Length: 332
Ligand SMILES: *Cc1c(COP(=O)(O)O)cnc(C)c1O
Image 1 (cartoon, rainbow, N blue to C red):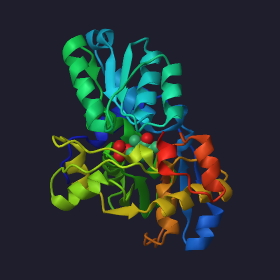
Image 2: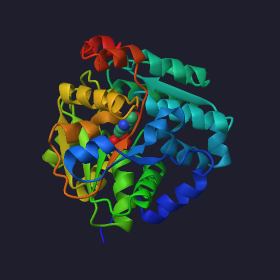
Image 3: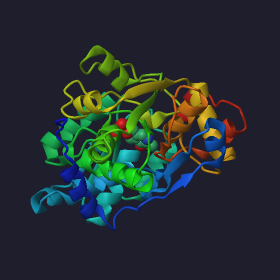
């Protein structure tokens, strides 16, 4: 038995805690991809989750796990967008204060949504690390409770509830493709799935531009990477040089990691729209993109996790029309 710090029991408890606060999203068979690859290819439509990404699972579980004194202090996080939005939503449900810190790389559409949910926003610097420094300052100064985007047991357990659903919906899954950034999603999903179905292979997918977890796994320890604009903006940022949980869990539980070019990610977004009629953001399209790029060895039922849909619609329009939007414009 592989030792991890987030157990299947922890994930089942999370599922009970967040029941009624998050959607159980559907899994559908992709006719097109199944024919193309000669194996059943299922799409887990988690981009349809409330707030537009799976991040609501971890945020809801972490917020619901706070005690009354912590709830009174309010929560704070650094986020490239989807965690901030999810945390703002979860805090609002509990009537709590939420402060979200982010860098200038965050797309404007994500900002507006967080503001609409009533959270306070601070924009600082040009990287996730700069945003994190502002969080540390406010935790010290104002006593807010930090709930980080991925490296926290209650966040990982919440994301793991997605893994439970995926293996229940496709019990004979031979392979799951999971978007990978800080690794909270991959850690939770692998802990949940391997606890039920140890033979199911789980592969993380990142963009080649600034793949922090992949670089860290190769180095054998968390390493810094330069954060670059990418179509998969939700996958940007480092894993934290003092990473406590997700690095070890990804190292021990993930079967492989695939990296994709920007063109490959664009092709994934386009396929999702034209063939599956789904609007997904770059990070949400990497599983499809990995299949289309021929980077996956599929010899049994596949589950592709579509993780989010919070893409700027002008950028989306350009991508599906075959015009690659300039990355700078996309990230503006
Ligand atoms: C955060 C996010 C990811 C990656 O999750 P990690 O836990 O950081 O690995 C993937 N897709 C979307 C849409 C996200 O918001």
